Image (cartoon, rainbow, N blue to C red; front, side, top):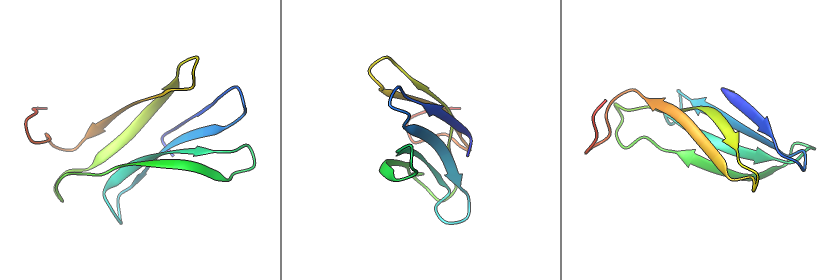
Length: 79
């Protein structure tokens, strides 16, 4: 787990990275009892690139903002 934030309903949002299976990250929303409400995966576009979500923030409407990093440039972008 890289980061976690809690909303007004005591739901938990976490950012995670899986280096072994998919080399990608995810943002997950959990209830206050630990049940998963949703997961948004951040898939790498190539096997040589890893996508890592780092920090999370919520706005007043509980929209989630994610910052992070990649290990290489995505097509059409530069590092």
